[in-house]
Image (cartoon, rainbow, N blue to C red):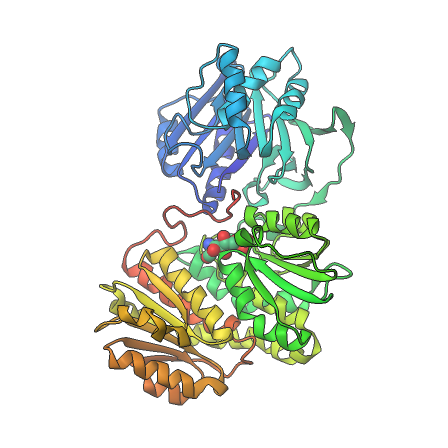
Length: 577
Ligand code: M6R
């Protein structure tokens, strides 16, 4: 979603800001802008891609050593230049970039209007710029402190003040914000956007504000200066290039064997991170939910109890009476998904234990939960997650303990084989040219993989797709099957071959075109086409069976000429509820 970059460092800021915005593109955005402080604050904004912003920059002089930039994913108001950040205060004194949502926007808008200022955009963020100028009496840090004391909701703020053109001011509440140090000082919502000259970072905590100069930063909490830890900016936090691949999605797919191997061999977990308590709930959104669902049978086997799997956004409204000793395991690749963070907070309020499974150690989710287990997938740039999903399955396999240890160890090698087996799907993509709707069906762990396959296809090809438990098809959805409807049948569990054959026959009888993803030659023979997988433990199989589904989605989207790494309307990390 929205991304922030800021730089002050005794050299031209604009190119550094643009490079930072490009690194933030993967988060998803629909407009972008930068502001630079010179004799006055000047800004350039544009709807659409950063390349459009660059074109505008060619026609503008934006000179200054200190600036802020933003990629916006529209929430309050359409993607227009007026709504695009940075927002200026009416007197031109302040420029603001903002990630998050100001919940008391209406009330503050009225306050600003009462002071004689008419906002020009629909955004909650613009109001922050006006408040800063209203509360300003010469010290921008004081104005920022007064301003944030009026804000309800979540915010990461980057601010320029025309009176102090070498400084950036920052504030953080429930939305990530980092300060980077090196040759110059940087502000960003995301380590991947920091320039190469930055080698150390401070992760700001909720309630902190900061003043950044070219030589470093001073951090404040409730108006008092505080000392902050600096840590090395690991190269794994920086966005790697495409390394010759045409898209990040395919690059990240091929990184899966290594990413799974890292996740299971160099474990990164808190001291008490394990399965514990009287019952387990798995909670996540999108692919993280699908990964959790695919592992339910495994966790039910090891805990001997039924395991709940909940969508984070729905968990908030469940009427469950607090159960002493329940453990909630919250899965999130980014660790910044608003629904999942709110679910973790709600779980804590109800007195449950909380464990985060996330790919970003320094994330809000890790900090919110009692304990953590990190996947080691490395930065994931493609909006459509691939290695995020498979490493989550591997991490849940680690939690499942000894009974699954041998099967978990095999996953990297099996993922490698699945990648090779999937290469033939390039030729199958043609069958989807005129597909009205595509089905993905499976049972048990294969059902989680089927849901994920459908999500991948929808996300990047924009073809309607339905992930369905194979047994459910006959209860209604089968009415959509007609001649040529593509149906992907996932079957990795030998115990379910008989039932899978029946489902496949039912589809074929109605003219469906079935592509099998299976380790069973018998199932493969019953399908029109098949990807042969190596045999895999049926309770961990989603880490392997999902790989052909990712590849299929990729090939279909490629044929259709879609923007694979940045699909329309989507954001990499969804930081609003
Ligand atoms: O970062 P998270 O795992 O919390 O993200 C959850 C979903 O937004 C995410 O998995 C989304 O569904 C992906 N874009 C799917 O590819």
